[in-house]
Amino acid sequence: MISDFINLDRSLNEPMYSQIYLELKKAIENGNINADEKIPSVRKLSADLEVSKTTVETAYNLLCAEGYVINKPQKGFFVEKGLYIEKSEASHKADNQSEKPVYEYDFSGKGIDSECSNIREWRKYVKDILNREYLLNTYSENQGEEELRKAIAKYAFTTRGVNTTPERIIIGSGTQTLLAILCGLLGKGKKVAIEKNTFPQAEQVFRVMNYKVMYTEADSKGITPESLDRIMPDVLFLNPNHNRTNGVGLSATRKVLLINGAKKNKCLIVEDDYNGELRYNTHSMMSMQSMSDGEHVYIGSFSKILLPSVRISYMVLPPKLTEEYKKNRENYNQTTSKIEQLALAEYIKAGKLEKHLRKSRRYYKTKSERMRECLSRYFDDFTLNETSMYFELRTNISIEELKSNGIKPMTTSADGALRLNFSQISIEKAEMKNSRVTDPAECF
Image (cartoon, rainbow, N blue to C red):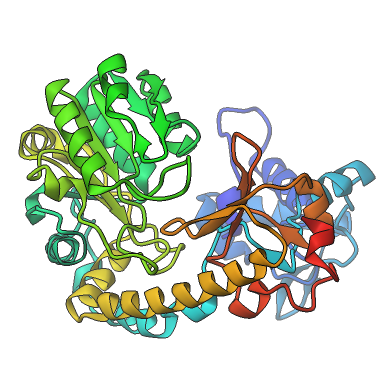
């Protein structure tokens, strides 16, 4: 509503009509009110602003006199054409620089392939919740909708062996949100051990919460148990599905050693099980949370399994931290849409998510094989990070050169390896057919 941006300061000596006139004039010049757009009637604006009709009429007459608006009999007041003041060349240049370029081959991993989304089915469940008006007239539960927590408890046990009850699950709009809650429960001044260059967003949360971040050592099998003895952390944050040394996940033996090392050092493990259920080349492994009898924290999400735009993650707390959370539960606002929470609960209960998961595994397996076949034509040394869905390879070409050829990579690792994430790119483009780069060897 136009009246929303008209700020009247009744403490000023400047007349009300003059303030209204200046606010409308500025809005027209800035393009916030378009040419030929009808502005509110005198009666409507006077009611919205709680001023007399004479005050509004005076402001409108000034705008008419200066050619900003025109009074059309029996129709109302309309903005004249040609009044929008063009931005300076410098402003246009800044706007153009902020526009995101479009790449023919996007390996950044910022989305998923449309062939691997289930939007049509998902839309049905969202629509069904929208039709239940009685559910939407209240705020979401602080901890997350109970129906969703019940559904997740069963789903997480079935797919990852996670040992939990709905009471121990917290819903949030992403891992960072949940980590902030966790840090609040653990208290200040903690020391956290994390593998270097694996999850900068998690590091950011820990640093903001004044945690001391220490980096673990890793060998070909992942984080070494000796790291815990050296660092003696309060918290060990890890992704058991990814080893930055060679891209493979932690073996069962290494998991047991880390769990025992954490117990010896009285350290809490925070397991970021990103896409843990989305294994397609190897058999799914049990979560560390299930192996430790539920004594550690587990974090899961649905961004790559369902839709990246549906920001729903969940955290499973051990019993002791659950009791601590309950003490201040009412002070935590829920950050995830109630509509999407309820829709996801129904989607899971109907078995749609597990069905979609099976389909996704088959699809990503085919896509990874196609990518591997393409890369093997030009490279001898590359590895696949299965759950994160990217290949890591070595090349001397810069990211800028790749981008100039219409190829956007995911990122480069700390040691300079190039990462190509195939979650978003189609199978056909995974082969780089019809690329502006006639020979991929010229590019990499």
